Amino acid sequence: MHDSPAHPWTVATLAAEVGVSRSGLARRFARHVGEPPMTYLATWRVATAADLLRDTDATVSSIAHQVGYSNTFALSVAFKRCRGITPTQHRAAALHARGLSA
Image 1 (spheres, rainbow, N blue to C red):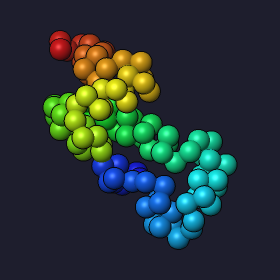
Image 2: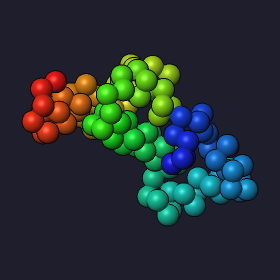
Image 3: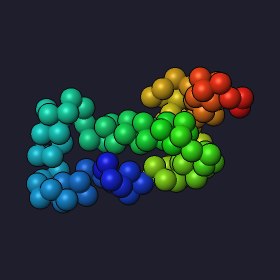
């Protein structure tokens, strides 16, 4: 997940990667990480997008694809759900914090 956030991960593909059943993976993952694998993946994708928004000039659309979302809207919905702001607002806040204008 960490190395390939854009991969179309499912619980089944993750389980196959590590050689366990889907239910076994879901149970162990939640016990050790504290949340289900797909919830963790969504959070990881948004965190990765946040870093890219802050540290690069890449478009929101290209960042969406880099982290596994099919389009800007899908990333924006996930970003707002996780962070409470849109990707564009996050980028503007990061630029402001560095003393640059958006």
